[in-house]
Image 1 (cartoon, rainbow, N blue to C red):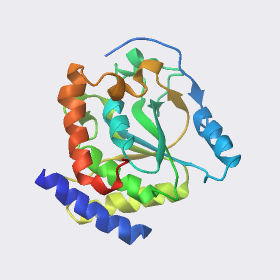
Image 2 (image 1 turned 30 degrees about the vertical axis):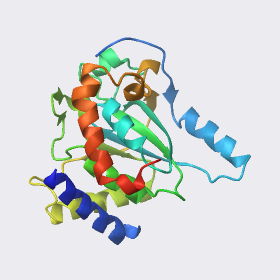
Image 3 (image 1 turned 135 degrees about the horizontal axis):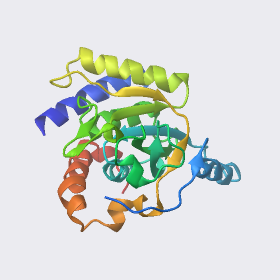
Length: 226
């Protein structure tokens, strides 16, 4: 916990300096997420601000989804696969580690409420970015620590943040998170969506997801939804 709090403190300082498992089912291929477009169209018809998207890989997407769902300004979190060479992959295929995909979450957020910098701060705390292809007992390239940037600004912010974390020695080892361009996002099967909230009593959720979620909440208490 001490290490986690130290990292969170460094994250806050850096944010300021920067400016602020398997069943098969149908899932969709997204060049630009349909959900993102639909949600922005709905907002455009009202008075709300348009959304932006952040895409993170931080181990099993059940954990990442549950964590980022807690943050104020995050409208929706969607689990899926990206970065591989197989079209329309299934969860079973991705789990073999041979498709090249990472398990990721698309995080749709209101930038007037929470910034990309703040989401980066949450990303670094949400997992161990010093392990490239492993988080706990989840091992393989599909669990790689990764940021999939949507534009040059996101790439620059991620690069600067990673460099500063290493300069500040926020972790005992260097941060090895990969920075990769956002390409084709394949939405994961329906049963993966909102997984923790629908399966919180299952063993993996109790022994893996819940402890990570509890630590995340302690660090970001003032940023959580009521």
